[in-house]
Each structure stands twice: as C-alpha cells, then as structure tokens.
Amino acid sequence: MNKNVLVTGGAGYIGSHACKALKAAGYVPVTFDNCSTGWADAVKFGPLARGDLLDRARLDEVFAEYQPIAAMHFAALSQVGESMQEPGRYWRENVTGALNLAEAAVAAGCLDFVFSSTCATYGDQDNVVLDENSAQLPINAYGASKRAIEDILKDFGAAYGLRHVIFRYFNVAGADPEAEVGEFHQPETHLIPLMLDAIDGKRDALTIFGTDYETPDGTCIRDYVHVCDLVDAHVLGLEWLKSGKGNRVFNLGTGDGFSVREVIQHSHSVTNRDVPFVEGDRRPGDCTKLVSGSSRAVNELGWNPKRSNLEAMIRDAWRWHQNTDGHYAK
Ligand code: UDP
Image (cartoon, rainbow, N blue to C red; front, top):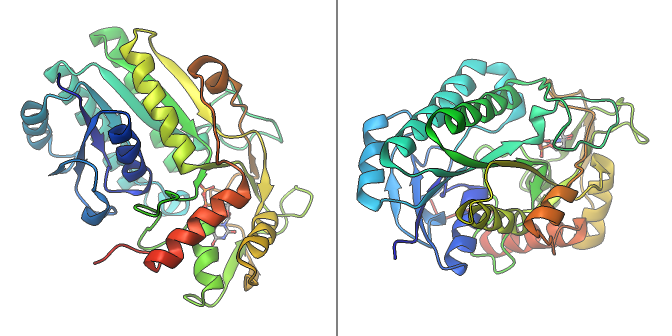
C-alpha cells in the first residue's frame, strides 16, 4: 500500500525531524523543498523532490509522481524580525505558496493536510495562557501570513472537502537525540542556537532583545517544546485524519514559560560554560509572552511530550552542535 506523505520543507529544521518520525512510523516521507533555507543533506529518510511552492506545475508533477496519501506543510519563511522588514515576501511565499499547495493537493485528490501554524497568530495578549479558542490577533507579518493560511484551509475544507489538522507551535527547540538531524539556519536568528554559538565562541555574544518587558526579569517569555515531541504530534495528527476524526486545531507547547534570562541560566547548567551576552533593544514584532494551553493535544490526540523540558532541549541541541559543529556539510 502507498505510504507516501508529501513533506514540504522536509530539508528544514522541523521538517527533517518530521521525516525521521514518519519513517519510524512506517510512512515514506517525500520531501518537497527548494533548499533555499533548508539543506539537501538533511533529507535522509526518503526521497527529495526539489521544487518551489510558487511553481504550481512542479507541484502537480510531484503529486502525480508520488501520489501522496497526505501532505504535511512545513515550508515557510519563519523569522518574525524579517517579516516586519519584508512583509511582501512573507505574504507571497507563505500564503501564495500554501494556496498553490492546497490547490494542487485538491486537484490530485490528496485530501488530508497537516499544517504547521504558529502561536504568533495569537499576538500579544496580556499575560494569558493561550488556548485554541484564544483570539488570533497577530502583531507581525509572519503570524498574519500563517493565520491567512489557516483561513484558506478552512475555506478549502468547506468547498472541496480538504481535511486539515492545524498545529500552532510555540517555540520549537532541541534536536534529534541521535544527532542525525538538528537545527541550522543561515543566517541563524533563534535564541538557543545563537546562545550555543556564543558559548562556543562562534559569535562574540548573544544580544538579549529587550530588558524592559512587563515580565518578572524584563525579558520575553516563551514556551519551548522539543522538536521530537512536536513531530510526534504530527504523526498523531496524520493518524487522526486517516481515522476520519475531521478538522481540528491543536496548540503544541508545554504550558511552562521561560524568560530569555532563564534560558541563559539553564544553558549554563547544561553546558557548564558561561553565555556571553549583552543587553540590546527590543526586536520589532516580538510578543511579551507566549505560553500555550496544550491540554487539547494531550487529551484528544494522546500526545505525550517526553523531552520537552528545557534541560533536555538544550542538551540535545548542544550534542548536535558539538557533533556537527552546528551545521550540515555545505
Ligand atoms: N531572542 C533574543 N536574542 C536573540 C534571539 C532571540 O533575546 O538573539 C529572544 C526573542 O526576543 C524571543 C526569544 O528569544 O523573546 C525567542 O526568540 P526566537 O527568535 O528563538 O523565536 P520566536 O519567539 O521569534 O519564534
């Protein structure tokens, strides 16, 4: 029986971990990626079909060649700061790309769709724990583009029977404990890999973006979830769709928030090394606090996050960083 699952962005950080989890669950992950921000060397668990989501004809070809039973859509531009400077790119690449993918999926009769959305769709909501019914009021173009894609999926569900599971991620961190795949962005903008680079002397110091937020220590609070737990939820989401349970949105976070300063402290205890840092200005588009209420995924999907404590996430990221020097071969 065909077990092909189309994984857009399978050469990227989360997508590559999803491919590993899909393979372990008996599926064949078919990566669709233009390798603009991903790495061909990260595609280790199934075939790579190079292509761009803005190229509808190429999408149709890949659907025809592999006849996937479902699509998992990870490919996207995902930097909050960049999205404030270049919103047009975010609207075009994220929204038009997803629209092309959804149309190609419907045309090919591939009607199960797992989408990677974000807590950035919620925006800055005064110190609340966000559940799936919280209002979606994004304050940056990244979050706005992801919310628009959620709307596309809902409309396609009503009009064409496209079934979807939408995951709203909080802050994804860590790496495959076997260090086959890990986090590497070029340029890197995320807190934990930047911190490990600073610890390692690969950059001078980490800049803390803003120390005057209304939080106990003045720095932003985020809910960090281990990438392996996150992708396990995607396999469960796929099985949810295949068992006919229908459209559903799930937050993926732990419910625990950590400030930037707390992440730095935990890193010190894991690596036994100081994190050189300087205090800088706020980064435009950053929310003060993003913490998930994620009981729905636990109760309904049977999600059981095993590695999502900060120490394990930093330890796994540190192992990947040390084993690989923090990047794929170029
Ligand atoms: N952050 C920071 N310095 C950096 C990168 C990130 O202080 O060099 C902060 C950022 O302001 C946010 C948190 O770390 O509060 C997580 O940022 P990241 O870019 O990793 O993820 P995001 O929350 O934007 O998805």
